[in-house]
Image (cartoon, helix red, strand yellow):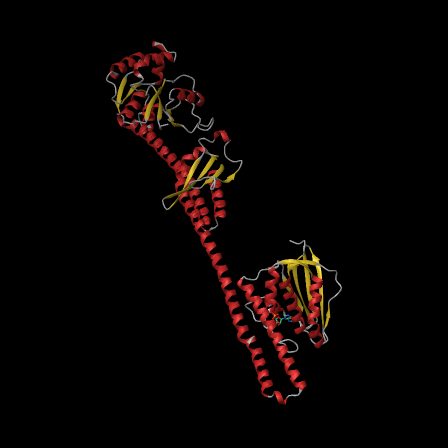
Length: 583
Ligand code: ADP
């Protein structure tokens, strides 16, 4: 509604007030007249309001100027905000300064205006006076009938003369013009306009404050959003922001070119917002933009305060740019992360390959070379001095050559198995195997070596378990574990075997009463990139390859290998393999 001010004034002063409004050219101000009320019972504020409201339905503000004809109560009942008052101590204060009014009345003047004169007879008779009583009354109260002339009417002189005759007192005129009335009306209009401006500014300020609070909240959320790189988390944060900003019932993420492969995704759904039927004018879309390119949209459905829809729509382009950017960045981050992961795997594989290669060359250059050196040395000594040796010495030479050859052969076998496992050529062909039998066969093989070192091999009397594994590789594992146990156990020691079922796996252990393994070394036993090689208790040599091969073989069969050891007391190496009806 356009702001409009209605000024209410008594008909006595209406010509002057109207003239001022007209001369000043106020398009937003009109003058409303109420009938002269002097001598009638005083009207209450309620009556006044009623009268004002019925006569000015087009106005946004009502202003009353008057004095004792209405009982103006500022406080009770409280005036509505659209009503204001200019209470005067005397009616004529509209036309002349209050002090002058008082002084003129004090000099026994009866003041009249040009607006009063045309109906003077009705007014006086309305108070209950006739010709005679009027003369009596005025004769007693006043000495002069004084017209406050503002220069608006030409007929006033005749009317004044007539009135003077009627009430029986002389008359005179005081010419004051419109300046006082103009000042009063200007003041009222200016004050009203100022308050209008102030209210509009306050409303604007409130709106701006609300908007800036929303923006700062949005930017705070956005700064949190920018710290994320995970698409799922970004969508969760976007959903939170949309709930905070728009309080809708639902929101959907609709990817660009959405189809069955890329369907719309519900970001959230709750009991907020309007009922479904009222959603038509309470929903809007945030177009996601990345590099000036459409990147899908977010549908915000059924906001709680549809009256702010216009404002939400104004906010949505900037949100669309930010959401679009972070979502597309998340996709890029995802690719980078995948590449990083692949790189990490490749780098680990490369390290392992490098370590494997180093180990391989080390073994060939050192562990395989030195037994051959010994063999060649023995053989040339044997050949050169063959005739000088006794038969017993010759046998001893051959035994030594046999021992070295056996060890070297074992090393070669391990090396070959390992090389095949590394190249991926080694295929496990699992079969049902009796674990007890496998251990007994190996106990038989190692018995001579054990008795040489005076070590007891205790096969135990466990109930047999059938495992489902590759015979060759599991045999190699048991062989290596017994060989190590013998190598690192002193004369008079013991090596025992145990096996049991645990779920769908069999656990097989080889325990010795040997020198044990320091904890730091135990952590590195099964790693290709570490060096844990030690000579045995009888100076037996090793390669540091056996346990790595064991781990490889056990894992190929679907099991695990581990060690428990205490320095100086002994070690237990255990591994698991699937049972026949295992996984
Ligand atoms: P190798 O025995 O040929 O050196 P392994 O890989 O079989 O290579 O063993 C690596 C190292 O682990 C050994 O050199 C030794 O230090 C330690 N080790 C293995 N088994 C035992 C054991 N039963 N008792 C003590 N130490 C052991």
